[in-house]
Image (tube, rainbow, N blue to C red; front, top):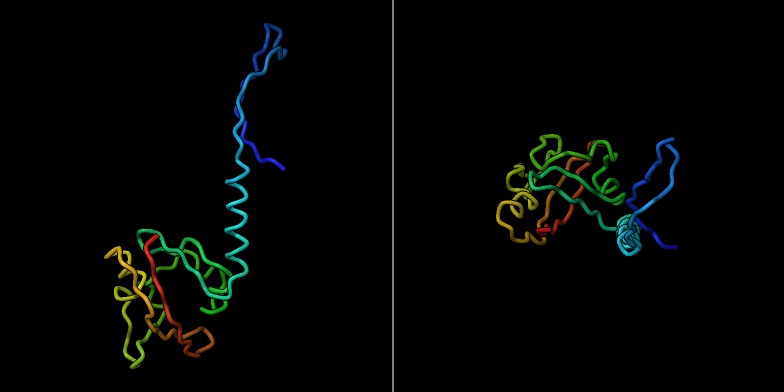
Length: 137
């Protein structure tokens, strides 16, 4: 199977009947296969993966992230580290403010934040402890 993108133009005569079609096509097979491989990888990972844009808004995530964070895709999509609903805590139980979350530190510095432990209060009223690695993308 080849995936192609075509661009063309139909020329019509004075009776509005097509008489010539010209165009080009571009092979997009590799792009489509890469996107499909990316999606398959995201869907089968046991580790939660979250991608945030330059403003810190969550723009992509995998099913494992939803399960780990105890949130539905609708609840996770668009959320930022500044959202007070995270109710994040440090290992000593003190508040873990959004501006200090690993992803925000990485966004501000352009440097990785690795092995950061954070507790999140889940909607079920439990605390889930996660270890976070945040990398610039």
